[in-house]
Image (cartoon, rainbow, N blue to C red; front, side):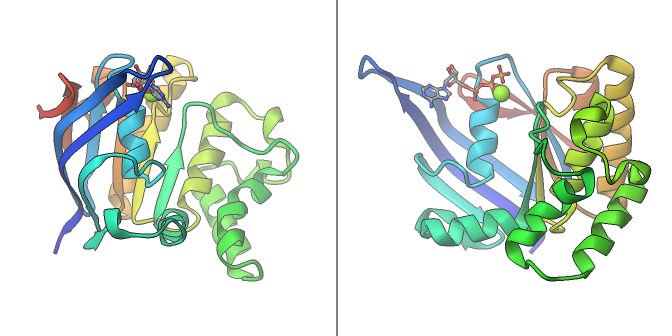
Amino acid sequence: MNNLIKINKINKKFKLSNNENLLIFENLDLNIDKNSITSIIGPSGCGKSTLLNILGLLDSSYNGDYIFNNQNIKKMRNSHLSKIRNRNIGFIHQFFYLIPELSVLENIKLPALINNSNDPLITRDAIKLLETLEIDEKQNMKPNLLSGGEQQRVAIARSLINKPELILADEMTGNLDESTSDEIIEFFLNFIKKNNLTLVYVTHNSKYAEMADFQYELKNKTLLKK
Ligand SMILES: Nc1ncnc2c1ncn2[C@@H]1O[C@H](COP(=O)(O)OP(=O)(O)OP(=O)(O)O)[C@@H](O)[C@H]1O
Ligand SMILES: [Mg+2]
């Protein structure tokens, strides 16, 4: 019952413009337990973002089975997939994708407003996250005025506002200098552990990969456990 993700023999290909197929994954298996931290490392172009898109229910054009929280994803309609994605999965990217016209606080509240537009608890939860991430004094500022590390904290808070079952992070420190990256990763992994969340993160950096409970390398179109 402790299993959150069970992926079985996934095959994934992209159709190229010359009508040839590019095979990305061949018989790829992955199990993720609840309350665990998993890292995925691998060279540029090996398919890390493609895999996170599949895990995050953004891409369903593949063969093989995907069971998320005991639900068969392959049998689900798109509308159901969007609901699960919005309520149960949080995303963090290298480029923070904050909305420049909205304040820090409004950016964080946005995914929650999509579910329930008039819940006064949303503001309370968003401010609590800002306090935990130590950026509450920036809550009324526009994100472009914040440093890269601060913007990533806002993106982290936004990924957590719906209390997702799963958090997916794609090279989350790829756009930050080394000391800010170290600080963000350390803080974030501690936060995930303390709050019993489940995280899968992709990185190029073996030092960060080694901080996970479970480490995988994406190689030869499949995942190898390290
Ligand atoms: N929509 C698409 N159509 C065709 N090819 C694609 C598509 N999306 C990705 N690819 C190809 O699939 C391969 C894997 O891409 P992906 O973005 O998953 O790599 P990655 O491991 O995340 O790389 P990076 O570390 O540079 O972010 C690449 O060769 C890429 O060109
Ligand atoms: Mg990528």
